Length: 252
Image (cartoon, rainbow, N blue to C red; front, side):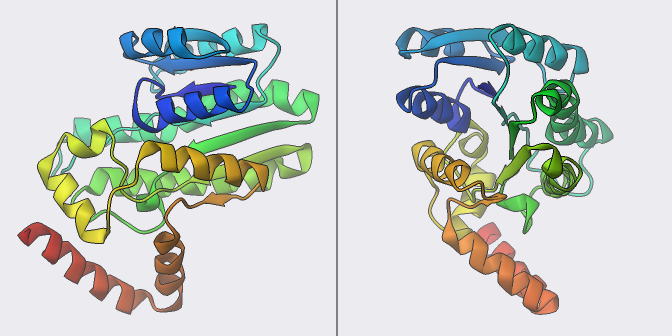
């Protein structure tokens, strides 16, 4: 199994849960290595830490090559992501940074892992995409736009490779208590307007169940499923409701 963005939050919770479930080996990737090195010391399975910037295709290819040397990749959790807490006027470099990490990171991972998976006739891609990829996050335009694109990519991969034995799931949690959400008081305040923050361990529990059921959408928060159905049923009303929620969050 391979997990990107493994140095904290959801990635760390996934590593702990998969190890507890009996994973034989984990390749844990991130740009920050100290937490991964510490995590490797506590897990009961073999751990291969590898520094990986998912926005760099060369790094991603080296990561997948390391995993293939362990015997192949049965599950690739493309979990790394970034946010800005900015609106339409975010600098171009921040728009580009979100695109490279939140979209191209998944593209690079799929390009690197799929050939061997297709040859074996099996493999699983899990993309962490956020509820913002199904709905939206009013206070972060680059994040919302790129997470929507990440969901669309996962849909395309499922359609294109499903008949080759490749399973694809997208993990779309609402607010999760991670370094990304708590680093900005504005982001945390807005997320709380949508409901209480989930703990990473709750998300990991949902992932295990979702993978076992081979569900495309893994939604740790059932309210996200309700909101998605409301959005599809009446887009105009949903947009009006979102404006109200966005205003309430901004005033808190």
